[in-house]
Length: 103
Image 1 (cartoon, rainbow, N blue to C red):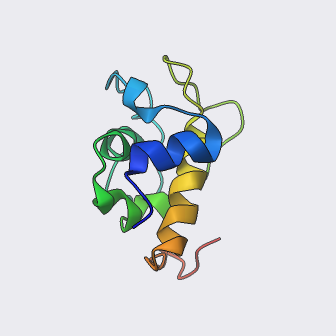
Image 2: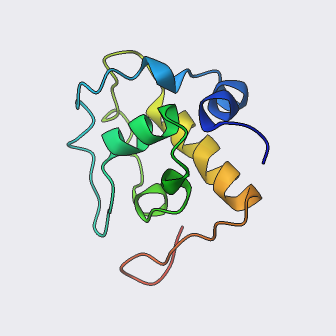
């Protein structure tokens, strides 16, 4: 274990996920087969909930440029990239998407 998720995210991309206020502004960011919303991913990372590293949402959601705006100024895309890297580091394989591939 390399440390709690909030600290890994902070050191990995400079974003403090603990600033997430659960405003749910990111709830409209969805993809097929998501088991957690983007807001739940952010809150889970802030609470050091390792479930975010094994959920399908981490791998199935792909950002659309210009659509990801956090009211707290958190770079959601960067946070998710750090979480993906940590999932790989910990050996949490991505689950297949609907089409059977993860890209």
